[in-house]
Image (cartoon, rainbow, N blue to C red; front, side, top):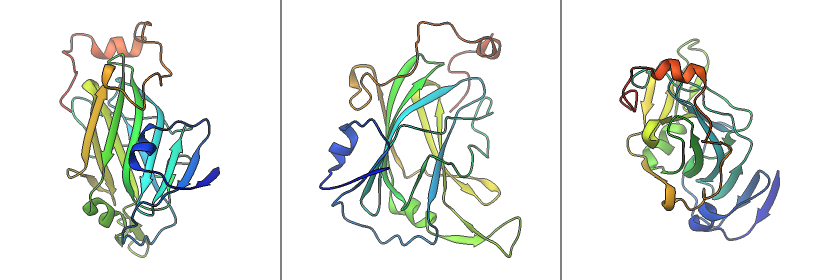
Length: 220
């Protein structure tokens, strides 16, 4: 991982490009979010047979560090009709940072929509405070559970949701997170960023799943 020190505004973080995973120290004001863990993790989830591919992620954390991810754990999920109470995975070998997020911006190909989307997430202190809190683990009360597992749901029509994994209980929807998603001519960071050829027809499993269903194939 290459480390660069210098001034980096939110707009530059959103718009810059890189050919390697990069961590950048910025002069963004630091928050008071002392974490009791070394790293937190984010993963992506999609509904069953409605796939998406995440191609680029840029993240700004509360310590003022910027990250660029081009090697990304791809979405997995089995929700049908609506989001399950438990989505996504726990830890990830690739999608991780040292301090809670201020902003995450990412590009994703919606295979089912045949579109490229650009989504920006702005996090408020309630999420950051929750991520630095803990409680006894539901499986073993002698162990400690930390709310450091963020899940980002990607659904048809470019709909995005954000949760924290919740110690064996239903995921905690982060309803205060400001979510903005654009596509087409409104793409900025994600213009020309794709790994999909939307001229191909759907795979057989997708065809079988959406047969006789009305788009967008659920309520997300």
